[in-house]
View 1 (cartoon, rainbow, N blue to C red):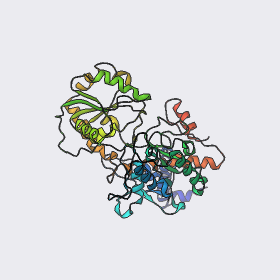
View 2 (view 1 turned 60 degrees about the vertical axis):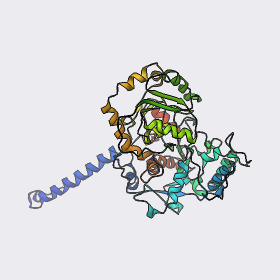
View 3 (view 1 turned 45 degrees about the vertical axis):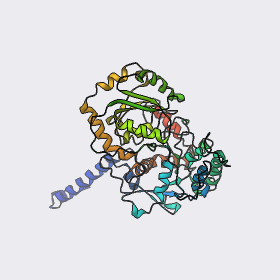
View 4 (view 1 turned 180 degrees about the vertical axis):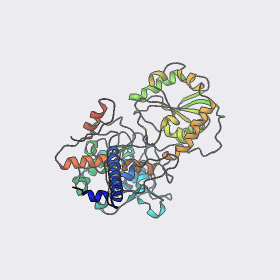
Length: 447
């Protein structure tokens, strides 16, 4: 009980002010904690600092990545077998180079972690040498290239190579690693960017953070936006670096690509039927080749809008070719998943058209013709601001943003690991289904 003499004494006002200050701080901390989407240790919170896409500022605390020193056959050996299958000398003057293709993220991520830290400025991820220091473990298997080694119809030199055998040997190798077994692979990261990559063993990696192009060929219990990261394709045409971009582009809408695709890509044939004779539009069937890429680059750079229909899966490299060509993408793919969408508002530089509308005769032509020059210029300026997100070979480019996206998965991953430890069979799919039932994301707290 407080004495009356103290209340009347000279020190009471100071004591009261001190008590109110402590109370104010306590209330502030309490409400800040309650409003935070994740209650995580301070280093993790650094990964969630908002970023202005123009400033490209990365977290002050980098993600610590332990990259496995895999047997050579899973990395450079895949390149050698790919070259041998095409009768290319692996000891040639150009050295051992990774073949360029649209799913080359695995190569750029591999190179990034081998680069000396002194050569990078404020990297979002650093390689650590000790398992106990790692936030995540990277498995640098060239899974997409492995799929292409014995691709039908290429090369004349017989190569004793089996992608399935390679996948199963990788699983066997990982199964002997303590770090993998400790958390059932939940804190492991692996690229399967080609929709068919790791096809034979994908169930083994269902707990891991998968780096994918989309979820078109994955079951809900194998991959989801909740734990995985969507990657941009490696654009197949050179970036348009002319800074004097003008509105004087002669073609209204451009598309050059395979007309006939499977699954959701069947919409391409329908689009050809309604667009190929429209005035001001160039809609051509084309295949991947050096000449095809040259013609596509010229077409995109002289067009205001570039069509991006679905491929065999909802995504395709054409979207990213359009972005680096400063050609406003017109996306006709209802189920498309997009990279870095927590940071990028694609509606600022792309146009999305429902498939059912796009295949109506005259719909796309009428819609695009009504877009003013001022609005078109806004789209183009936004494309220039954000295109570095999709440049793999540049500093402050796609690789940095991929690691940033991986870092943002850590709270979910750690939640699953902790639930595993107390005997609960944590499952990302149940988390997603619970939230998606009402069309909203939800956290499975286990309560």
